[in-house]
Image (cartoon, rainbow, N blue to C red; front, side, top):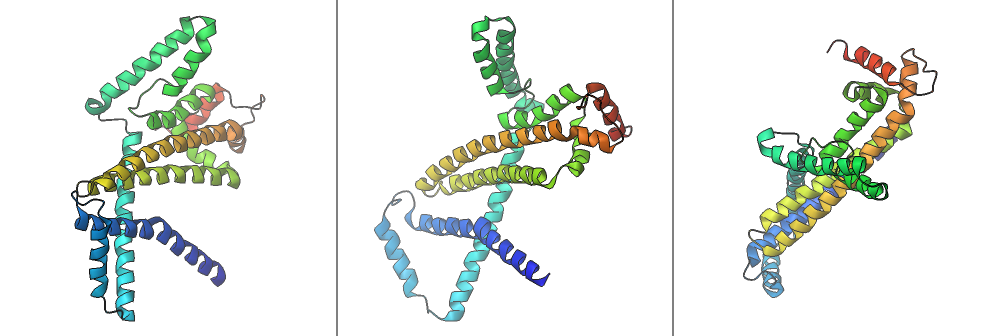
Length: 285
């Protein structure tokens, strides 16, 4: 047990340094460079080198000072890293936002209009063009849009599709289904969820670099790149998480029904049984 705890402690420490301290220390170093260079001398590496030499000349090179400096850099890096993660959480809330209606209503209506246009073309257009309209419709959303962002609609569509196919209220079904999922499946879902968090955190770093860009313009470029990459990674992660979640329901909903004393003869959960199970899960709520 002591060996296991030591290994876990080492792993957590390495992960903390990798995810928070080191990127934060890099940002702090760039912020210090930005304070020296500014916009006017943004790429003047000679000025930066001269300032670094002046700083090094004042360093007394004692071990205690070195330790204090290293500790200070790690703490600053960790603080900046926590700030980036906090901003990433805000970015994720924006990705998943459903309101307020006065703010996002226009975006939702535009997405819904585009989706309905493609849906009508699928229903009434020529058969030769049907496949392209289906692809265009699904690129907007798999179900009629109700969120301002693609990521929010992609994750919301899981519940809509599950209820339509099986009659299961996803919000009440998922905690019960999680219990019967095999460990490899749960691990895949946890990994997919972590990928979405990582993508939003990358966008959080992008916001920090954009703020630094007010003092040093190259940082603004880095911020734009990080935001674009974070959004792309977020869409990929959300799509993967939605696919895995819906697949888990497809494959293991029958196991959940059997665990609750039901035995669907068809080998899948019909809508009538799904609605019955959902009523049990709600308990009158």
